[in-house]
Length: 398
Picture 1: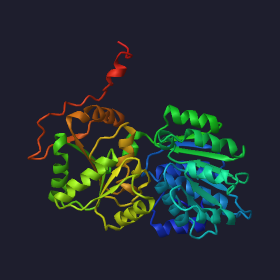
Picture 2: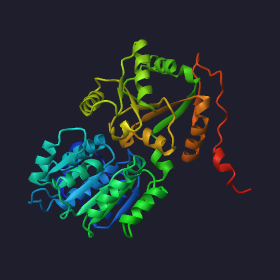
Picture 3: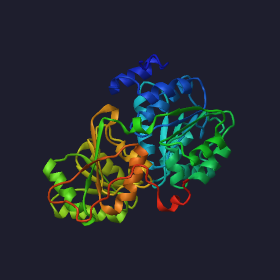
Picture 4: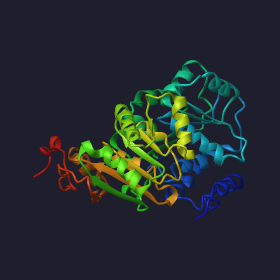
Protein backbone atom coordinates (compact mmCIF):
# COMPACT_ATOMS: atom_id res chain seq x y z
CA UNK A 1 0.00 0.00 0.00
CA UNK A 2 1.22 3.50 -0.84
CA UNK A 3 0.81 6.76 1.08
CA UNK A 4 -1.52 8.00 -1.67
CA UNK A 5 -3.78 4.97 -1.15
CA UNK A 6 -4.01 5.89 2.53
CA UNK A 7 -5.81 9.09 1.54
CA UNK A 8 -3.03 11.68 1.74
CA UNK A 9 -2.91 14.61 -0.67
CA UNK A 10 -0.19 15.22 -3.26
CA UNK A 11 1.41 17.97 -1.15
CA UNK A 12 2.07 15.43 1.60
CA UNK A 13 3.08 12.51 -0.62
CA UNK A 14 5.52 14.75 -2.50
CA UNK A 15 7.13 15.70 0.82
CA UNK A 16 7.25 12.03 1.83
CA UNK A 17 8.94 11.15 -1.47
CA UNK A 18 11.50 13.90 -0.86
CA UNK A 19 12.29 12.34 2.52
CA UNK A 20 12.80 8.94 0.90
CA UNK A 21 10.08 6.96 2.65
CA UNK A 22 9.44 3.90 0.42
CA UNK A 23 6.08 2.79 1.83
CA UNK A 24 4.00 3.11 5.00
CA UNK A 25 4.97 1.12 8.08
CA UNK A 26 2.48 -1.15 9.78
CA UNK A 27 1.42 1.42 12.38
CA UNK A 28 1.00 4.04 9.63
CA UNK A 29 -1.10 1.71 7.49
CA UNK A 30 -3.41 0.99 10.41
CA UNK A 31 -3.58 4.40 12.10
CA UNK A 32 -3.77 6.92 9.24
CA UNK A 33 -7.17 5.80 7.82
CA UNK A 34 -8.68 5.67 11.31
CA UNK A 35 -7.50 9.20 12.11
CA UNK A 36 -8.67 10.56 8.75
CA UNK A 37 -12.13 9.15 9.48
CA UNK A 38 -12.21 11.22 12.67
CA UNK A 39 -12.23 8.32 15.11
CA UNK A 40 -10.59 8.44 18.52
CA UNK A 41 -7.59 6.12 18.74
CA UNK A 42 -5.30 4.49 21.27
CA UNK A 43 -2.22 2.80 19.86
CA UNK A 44 0.62 0.78 21.34
CA UNK A 45 3.74 1.28 19.25
CA UNK A 46 7.37 1.64 20.21
CA UNK A 47 9.80 4.29 19.04
CA UNK A 48 11.19 3.42 15.62
CA UNK A 49 7.97 2.03 14.14
CA UNK A 50 7.06 5.21 12.29
CA UNK A 51 4.73 6.28 15.08
CA UNK A 52 5.19 10.04 14.72
CA UNK A 53 4.28 10.05 11.03
CA UNK A 54 1.23 7.91 11.79
CA UNK A 55 -0.44 10.83 13.57
CA UNK A 56 1.32 13.87 12.06
CA UNK A 57 0.49 13.00 8.44
CA UNK A 58 -3.28 12.61 8.93
CA UNK A 59 -3.28 15.66 11.21
CA UNK A 60 -1.74 17.75 8.43
CA UNK A 61 -4.20 16.29 5.93
CA UNK A 62 -7.15 17.28 8.11
CA UNK A 63 -5.85 20.75 8.91
CA UNK A 64 -4.66 21.76 5.44
CA UNK A 65 -8.06 23.10 4.33
CA UNK A 66 -8.05 25.98 6.78
CA UNK A 67 -5.78 28.09 8.93
CA UNK A 68 -6.38 29.65 12.31
CA UNK A 69 -6.85 33.40 12.14
CA UNK A 70 -7.37 34.31 15.79
CA UNK A 71 -4.58 35.28 18.13
CA UNK A 72 -3.50 32.85 20.85
CA UNK A 73 -5.57 30.02 19.35
CA UNK A 74 -4.45 26.59 18.16
CA UNK A 75 -6.17 23.91 16.10
CA UNK A 76 -4.24 20.83 17.20
CA UNK A 77 -2.31 20.03 20.38
CA UNK A 78 0.39 17.37 20.78
CA UNK A 79 1.50 16.70 24.36
CA UNK A 80 4.93 15.11 24.82
CA UNK A 81 7.03 14.24 27.90
CA UNK A 82 10.30 16.02 27.06
CA UNK A 83 11.62 19.13 25.36
CA UNK A 84 13.81 17.02 23.05
CA UNK A 85 10.79 15.09 21.82
CA UNK A 86 8.84 18.34 21.38
CA UNK A 87 11.60 19.69 19.13
CA UNK A 88 11.79 16.52 17.09
CA UNK A 89 8.05 16.15 16.60
CA UNK A 90 7.90 19.77 15.46
CA UNK A 91 10.75 19.08 13.03
CA UNK A 92 8.73 16.21 11.55
CA UNK A 93 5.67 18.46 11.22
CA UNK A 94 7.73 21.00 9.28
CA UNK A 95 9.29 18.30 7.08
CA UNK A 96 6.01 16.58 6.23
CA UNK A 97 4.18 19.89 5.87
CA UNK A 98 6.82 21.66 3.80
CA UNK A 99 4.32 22.17 0.95
CA UNK A 100 1.50 23.37 3.21
CA UNK A 101 0.84 26.79 4.70
CA UNK A 102 0.48 25.53 8.26
CA UNK A 103 2.23 26.92 11.31
CA UNK A 104 3.59 24.89 14.23
CA UNK A 105 5.64 25.47 17.37
CA UNK A 106 7.53 23.38 19.91
CA UNK A 107 6.90 24.79 23.38
CA UNK A 108 8.79 23.68 26.50
CA UNK A 109 10.41 25.02 29.64
CA UNK A 110 14.00 25.96 30.28
CA UNK A 111 14.17 28.65 27.59
CA UNK A 112 13.06 32.27 27.26
CA UNK A 113 9.31 32.30 26.80
CA UNK A 114 9.13 35.56 24.80
CA UNK A 115 9.54 33.92 21.38
CA UNK A 116 7.00 31.26 22.30
CA UNK A 117 4.49 33.90 23.39
CA UNK A 118 4.99 35.84 20.17
CA UNK A 119 4.30 32.76 18.06
CA UNK A 120 1.13 32.12 20.06
CA UNK A 121 -0.01 35.72 19.61
CA UNK A 122 0.21 35.25 15.84
CA UNK A 123 -1.89 32.09 16.03
CA UNK A 124 -0.85 28.49 15.34
CA UNK A 125 -2.24 25.44 13.65
CA UNK A 126 -0.28 22.88 15.68
CA UNK A 127 1.30 23.25 19.10
CA UNK A 128 3.71 20.60 20.40
CA UNK A 129 4.16 21.13 24.12
CA UNK A 130 5.28 19.66 27.40
CA UNK A 131 2.46 19.69 29.97
CA UNK A 132 4.11 21.99 32.51
CA UNK A 133 4.99 24.80 30.10
CA UNK A 134 1.58 24.56 28.43
CA UNK A 135 -0.22 25.05 31.75
CA UNK A 136 2.10 27.93 32.58
CA UNK A 137 1.25 29.67 29.29
CA UNK A 138 -2.43 28.93 29.75
CA UNK A 139 -2.29 30.49 33.21
CA UNK A 140 -0.73 33.60 31.68
CA UNK A 141 -3.54 33.71 29.09
CA UNK A 142 -1.00 33.31 26.32
CA UNK A 143 -2.97 30.44 24.75
CA UNK A 144 -6.62 29.44 24.56
CA UNK A 145 -8.08 26.03 23.80
CA UNK A 146 -11.59 26.63 22.44
CA UNK A 147 -10.63 26.11 18.78
CA UNK A 148 -8.72 22.85 19.27
CA UNK A 149 -9.90 20.11 16.92
CA UNK A 150 -7.38 17.35 17.73
CA UNK A 151 -5.37 16.22 20.76
CA UNK A 152 -2.46 13.78 20.69
CA UNK A 153 -0.93 12.29 23.84
CA UNK A 154 2.43 11.05 22.57
CA UNK A 155 4.49 8.61 24.67
CA UNK A 156 1.69 8.58 27.22
CA UNK A 157 3.39 5.93 29.33
CA UNK A 158 6.47 8.10 29.71
CA UNK A 159 4.42 11.13 30.68
CA UNK A 160 2.80 9.07 33.43
CA UNK A 161 6.17 7.66 34.55
CA UNK A 162 7.49 11.21 34.81
CA UNK A 163 4.62 12.28 37.06
CA UNK A 164 2.59 14.38 34.60
CA UNK A 165 -0.79 12.79 35.38
CA UNK A 166 -2.11 15.81 37.32
CA UNK A 167 -0.99 18.25 34.63
CA UNK A 168 -2.51 16.09 31.91
CA UNK A 169 -5.84 15.91 33.73
CA UNK A 170 -5.85 19.70 34.21
CA UNK A 171 -5.31 20.15 30.47
CA UNK A 172 -7.97 17.59 29.56
CA UNK A 173 -10.49 19.36 31.80
CA UNK A 174 -9.95 22.59 29.87
CA UNK A 175 -10.32 21.21 26.34
CA UNK A 176 -13.52 21.28 24.26
CA UNK A 177 -15.59 18.10 24.49
CA UNK A 178 -16.06 17.26 20.83
CA UNK A 179 -12.46 16.93 19.71
CA UNK A 180 -10.57 13.97 18.32
CA UNK A 181 -8.39 12.21 20.91
CA UNK A 182 -5.32 10.19 19.91
CA UNK A 183 -3.14 8.38 22.44
CA UNK A 184 0.16 6.73 21.56
CA UNK A 185 2.17 4.68 24.04
CA UNK A 186 4.89 2.04 23.92
CA UNK A 187 2.68 -0.17 26.07
CA UNK A 188 -0.96 -0.09 27.11
CA UNK A 189 -0.38 -0.56 30.83
CA UNK A 190 -3.17 -0.30 33.39
CA UNK A 191 -2.14 3.31 34.10
CA UNK A 192 -2.31 4.20 30.42
CA UNK A 193 -5.68 2.47 30.02
CA UNK A 194 -7.04 4.34 33.05
CA UNK A 195 -5.95 7.60 31.46
CA UNK A 196 -7.54 6.60 28.16
CA UNK A 197 -10.84 5.70 29.84
CA UNK A 198 -11.01 9.11 31.50
CA UNK A 199 -10.52 11.02 28.25
CA UNK A 200 -11.35 8.83 25.27
CA UNK A 201 -14.71 7.24 24.53
CA UNK A 202 -15.08 4.13 22.35
CA UNK A 203 -11.64 4.45 20.72
CA UNK A 204 -10.29 2.30 17.94
CA UNK A 205 -7.34 0.31 19.33
CA UNK A 206 -4.12 -0.68 17.57
CA UNK A 207 -1.33 -2.71 19.12
CA UNK A 208 1.99 -3.59 17.52
CA UNK A 209 3.11 -6.68 19.44
CA UNK A 210 6.25 -6.42 21.54
CA UNK A 211 8.04 -9.16 19.61
CA UNK A 212 7.33 -7.37 16.34
CA UNK A 213 8.25 -3.99 17.75
CA UNK A 214 11.60 -5.27 19.07
CA UNK A 215 12.37 -5.98 15.40
CA UNK A 216 14.44 -8.75 13.86
CA UNK A 217 16.65 -6.22 12.07
CA UNK A 218 18.19 -5.28 15.44
CA UNK A 219 20.84 -7.78 16.50
CA UNK A 220 20.65 -8.07 20.28
CA UNK A 221 23.11 -9.72 22.63
CA UNK A 222 24.49 -9.42 26.13
CA UNK A 223 28.09 -9.57 27.30
CA UNK A 224 28.59 -10.90 30.82
CA UNK A 225 31.18 -8.99 32.84
CA UNK A 226 31.96 -8.05 36.42
CA UNK A 227 30.54 -4.67 37.41
CA UNK A 228 33.94 -3.12 38.12
CA UNK A 229 35.18 -4.11 34.65
CA UNK A 230 32.37 -2.56 32.62
CA UNK A 231 34.13 0.68 31.70
CA UNK A 232 37.28 -1.18 30.68
CA UNK A 233 35.20 -3.60 28.60
CA UNK A 234 33.33 -0.77 26.90
CA UNK A 235 36.62 0.94 26.01
CA UNK A 236 37.93 -2.36 24.63
CA UNK A 237 34.80 -2.89 22.50
CA UNK A 238 34.95 0.63 21.07
CA UNK A 239 38.61 0.31 20.10
CA UNK A 240 38.63 -3.34 19.04
CA UNK A 241 35.53 -3.01 16.83
CA UNK A 242 36.26 0.57 15.75
CA UNK A 243 32.74 1.56 16.66
CA UNK A 244 31.55 4.83 15.25
CA UNK A 245 28.33 6.53 16.37
CA UNK A 246 27.18 4.86 19.59
CA UNK A 247 24.50 5.81 22.12
CA UNK A 248 25.38 4.51 25.58
CA UNK A 249 22.61 4.26 28.18
CA UNK A 250 23.36 4.66 31.87
CA UNK A 251 21.08 5.08 34.88
CA UNK A 252 22.28 8.25 36.64
CA UNK A 253 23.74 11.68 35.90
CA UNK A 254 26.65 10.95 38.24
CA UNK A 255 27.26 7.65 36.48
CA UNK A 256 27.27 9.38 33.09
CA UNK A 257 29.89 11.92 34.19
CA UNK A 258 32.02 9.19 35.76
CA UNK A 259 31.90 6.98 32.66
CA UNK A 260 32.83 9.87 30.36
CA UNK A 261 35.86 10.55 32.58
CA UNK A 262 36.87 6.86 32.54
CA UNK A 263 36.57 6.69 28.76
CA UNK A 264 38.62 9.85 28.30
CA UNK A 265 41.40 8.40 30.47
CA UNK A 266 41.56 5.57 27.93
CA UNK A 267 41.74 7.98 25.00
CA UNK A 268 38.06 7.93 24.00
CA UNK A 269 36.29 11.27 23.70
CA UNK A 270 32.67 11.08 24.85
CA UNK A 271 29.99 13.47 26.11
CA UNK A 272 27.44 13.15 28.91
CA UNK A 273 23.81 13.89 28.04
CA UNK A 274 21.47 14.32 31.00
CA UNK A 275 18.99 16.70 32.64
CA UNK A 276 21.73 18.35 34.69
CA UNK A 277 23.07 20.04 31.58
CA UNK A 278 21.42 23.18 30.23
CA UNK A 279 18.89 23.00 27.43
CA UNK A 280 21.21 24.89 25.08
CA UNK A 281 24.07 22.48 25.78
CA UNK A 282 21.83 19.44 25.29
CA UNK A 283 20.52 20.75 21.97
CA UNK A 284 24.06 21.39 20.75
CA UNK A 285 25.23 17.95 21.88
CA UNK A 286 22.34 16.34 20.06
CA UNK A 287 23.08 18.25 16.86
CA UNK A 288 26.77 17.34 17.09
CA UNK A 289 25.93 13.69 17.71
CA UNK A 290 23.58 13.58 14.73
CA UNK A 291 26.23 15.24 12.55
CA UNK A 292 28.91 12.77 13.65
CA UNK A 293 31.01 15.40 15.43
CA UNK A 294 30.49 13.43 18.64
CA UNK A 295 30.87 9.67 18.30
CA UNK A 296 29.97 8.50 21.80
CA UNK A 297 27.06 9.94 23.75
CA UNK A 298 26.52 8.69 27.32
CA UNK A 299 22.91 9.38 28.22
CA UNK A 300 20.52 8.73 31.07
CA UNK A 301 17.28 7.05 30.04
CA UNK A 302 15.09 10.05 30.82
CA UNK A 303 17.24 12.47 28.83
CA UNK A 304 17.40 10.11 25.86
CA UNK A 305 13.64 9.88 25.46
CA UNK A 306 13.62 12.56 22.80
CA UNK A 307 16.64 11.34 20.85
CA UNK A 308 15.60 10.44 17.32
CA UNK A 309 18.39 9.58 14.88
CA UNK A 310 17.36 7.73 11.75
CA UNK A 311 20.67 5.98 11.02
CA UNK A 312 22.02 5.23 14.51
CA UNK A 313 24.02 1.98 14.12
CA UNK A 314 24.02 0.82 17.74
CA UNK A 315 23.01 1.33 21.33
CA UNK A 316 24.79 0.01 24.41
CA UNK A 317 23.06 -0.64 27.72
CA UNK A 318 25.88 0.05 30.17
CA UNK A 319 23.25 -0.43 32.88
CA UNK A 320 20.24 -2.67 32.31
CA UNK A 321 17.04 -0.65 32.61
CA UNK A 322 14.01 -1.16 34.83
CA UNK A 323 11.15 -1.63 34.07
CA UNK A 324 11.58 -4.05 31.19
CA UNK A 325 9.59 -1.88 28.77
CA UNK A 326 12.41 0.65 28.97
CA UNK A 327 14.68 -1.87 27.25
CA UNK A 328 12.36 -1.96 24.24
CA UNK A 329 12.32 1.85 24.16
CA UNK A 330 16.11 1.98 24.23
CA UNK A 331 16.84 -0.53 21.50
CA UNK A 332 14.23 1.19 19.34
CA UNK A 333 16.68 4.09 18.95
CA UNK A 334 18.59 1.95 16.44
CA UNK A 335 17.33 -0.03 13.46
CA UNK A 336 15.05 2.74 12.21
CA UNK A 337 13.19 2.33 8.91
CA UNK A 338 14.21 -1.35 8.76
CA UNK A 339 17.92 -0.52 8.74
CA UNK A 340 20.27 -2.88 10.53
CA UNK A 341 21.08 -2.05 14.14
CA UNK A 342 22.90 -3.47 17.15
CA UNK A 343 21.85 -3.50 20.80
CA UNK A 344 24.55 -4.63 23.23
CA UNK A 345 23.97 -4.93 26.97
CA UNK A 346 26.76 -5.24 29.55
CA UNK A 347 25.41 -7.53 32.25
CA UNK A 348 26.90 -8.30 35.66
CA UNK A 349 25.57 -10.65 38.34
CA UNK A 350 23.68 -7.86 40.11
CA UNK A 351 21.73 -7.22 36.87
CA UNK A 352 20.27 -10.75 36.85
CA UNK A 353 16.76 -9.81 37.98
CA UNK A 354 16.47 -7.05 35.37
CA UNK A 355 17.81 -9.39 32.70
CA UNK A 356 15.20 -12.04 33.46
CA UNK A 357 12.39 -9.51 33.41
CA UNK A 358 13.57 -8.10 30.07
CA UNK A 359 13.80 -11.57 28.52
CA UNK A 360 10.36 -12.43 29.87
CA UNK A 361 9.02 -9.22 28.31
CA UNK A 362 10.61 -10.11 24.96
CA UNK A 363 9.48 -13.72 25.14
CA UNK A 364 12.93 -15.14 24.41
CA UNK A 365 16.42 -15.38 25.89
CA UNK A 366 19.07 -12.97 24.66
CA UNK A 367 22.26 -14.37 23.17
CA UNK A 368 25.13 -14.42 25.68
CA UNK A 369 28.71 -13.66 24.74
CA UNK A 370 31.97 -13.30 26.63
CA UNK A 371 35.00 -11.23 25.68
CA UNK A 372 38.45 -12.67 26.23
CA UNK A 373 40.10 -11.01 29.20
CA UNK A 374 36.76 -9.97 30.72
CA UNK A 375 35.28 -13.30 31.79
CA UNK A 376 33.35 -12.49 34.99
CA UNK A 377 34.59 -13.83 38.32
CA UNK A 378 31.01 -13.60 39.57
CA UNK A 379 29.10 -15.66 37.04
CA UNK A 380 25.71 -14.42 35.85
CA UNK A 381 23.17 -17.22 36.55
CA UNK A 382 21.29 -19.02 33.82
CA UNK A 383 18.27 -16.97 32.76
CA UNK A 384 14.76 -17.83 33.90
CA UNK A 385 12.29 -16.89 31.19
CA UNK A 386 9.27 -17.02 33.52
CA UNK A 387 11.10 -15.22 36.33
CA UNK A 388 8.92 -13.85 39.14
CA UNK A 389 10.36 -11.28 41.61
CA UNK A 390 10.55 -12.46 45.23
CA UNK A 391 7.97 -9.97 46.49
CA UNK A 392 5.39 -11.45 44.09
CA UNK A 393 6.14 -15.15 44.58
CA UNK A 394 3.88 -15.63 47.59
CA UNK A 395 0.93 -14.51 45.48
CA UNK A 396 1.56 -17.08 42.75
CA UNK A 397 -0.87 -20.01 42.45
CA UNK A 398 0.43 -23.49 43.29
